[in-house]
Image 1 (cartoon, rainbow, N blue to C red):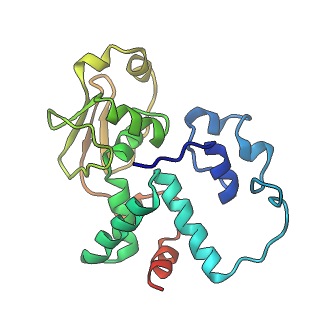
Image 2: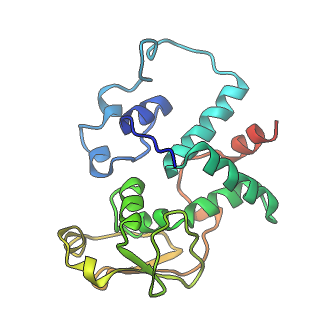
Amino acid sequence: MARYTDSSCRLCRREGQKLFLKGDRCYSTKCAIEKRNYAPGQHGQARKKISEYGTQLREKQKCKRFYGLQETQFRNLFEKAARKKGITGENLLIMLETRLDNVVFRLGFASSRKEARQLVTHNHFTVNGKKVNIPSATVKAGDVIKVKEKSASSPKFKEIKDMTISVPSWLTVDIEKLEGKVVMLPTRADIDTPVAEHLIVELYSK
């Protein structure tokens, strides 16, 4: 599958805000937004009028980049959200939040969603005792996500045991056991991703 391989910092600059794609670097003075808070490219600093369509497009691109999805993946997920009962935009965000790579990130086992995706792909986690290496796998209420015993001795996860981790209310984590649980599915109020999902719905409804 195609994967974005250019600089992650360019994406943050294009959206005009931190997308937290590079973990600890995003919280430091090395963050590109801190140095050059304007869009990349020759005309990045030019003032531009944004149309209604442009506003909707930027919101979709921002959401897609927050969660690290490609266009086809994102569109397919939106179509699934539209077929479910409830509010389409909220369904979409809940489906994005309950991806395994995002849950690994939310549990504090990775410093970014990109790193979480890599760790899942490299077989470092089990879900309910079974090996799962698909980042897009959906977790459900009651699922237990745990670092594999063989992986727990690696420096990466030993380091995590010394950290204080804050998780969303719909998750619990036991740092000593390197284990997290999905207590319940998140609601819109539980999701702090700064996205105006109604603009994405309006875009795809055209």
